[in-house]
Amino acid sequence: MKSKIQGKTQVIVITILATLIIVAGLSYAGVNFGGDILKSFNQQPTDEQNRPLYYPLEKLVISVESDKVIYYMMMEVSLETHDEPSLSQIRHFLPVIRNHFVKDLSQRNFQSMRGYLKDLASLQQELHQSLKLVLEKYQIPDVVDDVLITKLVIQ
Image (tube, helix red, strand yellow):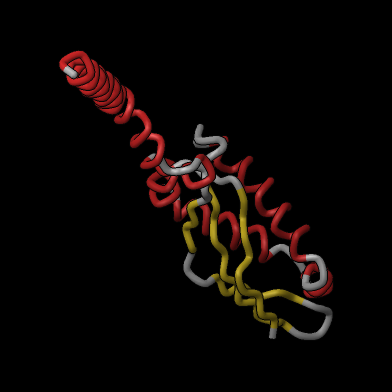
């Protein structure tokens, strides 16, 4: 009978020791590696880090000539960038950017602008390419990733 009790006691002691070793191992893993796991859950996805930032410009009002009449065009534009420091450069060079758009658009005629109403992407691309050239003169290339026309009215 004594041997049965001793055998049960040994099994209980071995079970307790094994449980303590397992708990200690899990605790060690949680302390040393759990922080990395939590950090990976708290990190924002790469899509969030690369999401675009927008800088809306004030409305542009430009006269557009045709053969008989002068039309007025009202346009709202937003500049897209993926680099947050670029926003401060855009703010600093805002007069240059607005001036460029006014000069560029005022040289166009009504017929060409009317054609762009059906193909706004082409106008956006042209404005973006010409803006890049202007900003390169100020040694700030690649500040603006895209030019988005958010509203366009010709009357």
